[in-house]
Image (tube, rainbow, N blue to C red; front, side, top):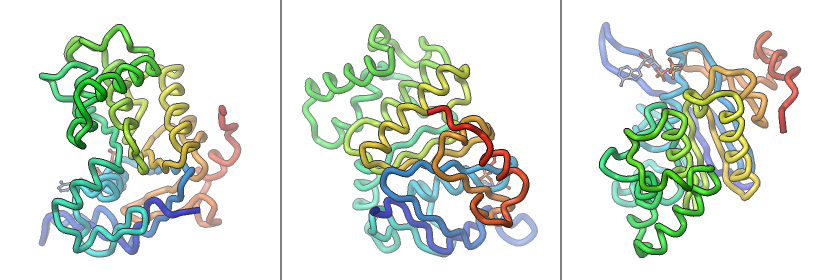
Length: 243
Ligand SMILES: Nc1ncnc2c1ncn2[C@@H]1O[C@H](COP(=O)(O)OP(=O)(O)OP(=O)(O)O)[C@@H](O)[C@H]1O
C-alpha cells in the first residue's frame, strides 16, 4: 500500500537555551492509504506538534516529511501550499472556521481556491452538509452554530475534494459520544476511499477505531504493537472497535 505520510527522524525544537523544548525527538512514522492511526499520549507529549508538522503547517527542526512520496524539504513555498490545500484536510481543536462565511461557504472555500466554479463548489458543499446532517444550517454563520455543529462543518471542510491525508486533533472534543462516533465513521469512510488519517486523542474509546495506536511520550513515539508500549497498549488491544 502507498505511504501517504512518512515522517523520517523528525525532531522539533521550540525556543532556545534555558527555554528550549524538544517537542518531538527523532520520530519515525509511516501511514499508508486506507489506514487510520491514533496518536495518544499525556498532555504536552507532542501530539499536536506531530500533526502540525505532518500537515506542513510547521517545519521540523531536522528530519524529513514526505506526502505521497514527495519530500516537503526543499519544495518551493507555493508548491507546498498547493499540496497542503489539495491533499491535506485538517480538523483542529479550535475548528478554524472563518467567522464571516456561512457553513456552506466555509466548506466550499477550499474548492473555490482550487479553481472550481462557485456554483459547483456550493453544490458539493450542500451534499457534504447533508451527509453531516446539517443541511438546514447551510446559511448559518459559525457563531450561530453549536460547538458540535461547528466541528461537523470543520470535518466537512476537511473531507471535501481529493484529500489524501486527514489530520484530526481531538476530533470529537465538543461532541457527545454518538456524534463523536459519527465523526469517526466519516473519517473511516474517507480511509476506505483511499485516504489516510492521523488523529490525536485522549479518548481510548475513540482510539479503538484506529488500525494502529502510536503512543507519544516526551516527543518520542512508541508503537503499541511494540512490546515496550506499556500497559496502555493492552487497554487498546482489548477494546472492541465499535465498527
Ligand atoms: N509554538 C510553541 N512554542 C513553544 N513551545 C511549544 C509550542 N508548541 C508546543 N510547544 C511545547 O511543545 C511540547 C509539545 O506540545 P504539544 O502541543 O505538541 O503537546 P500535546 O501532546 O498535543 O498536548 P495536549 O494533549 O495538551 O494538546 C509542550 O511542551 C509544549 O509546551
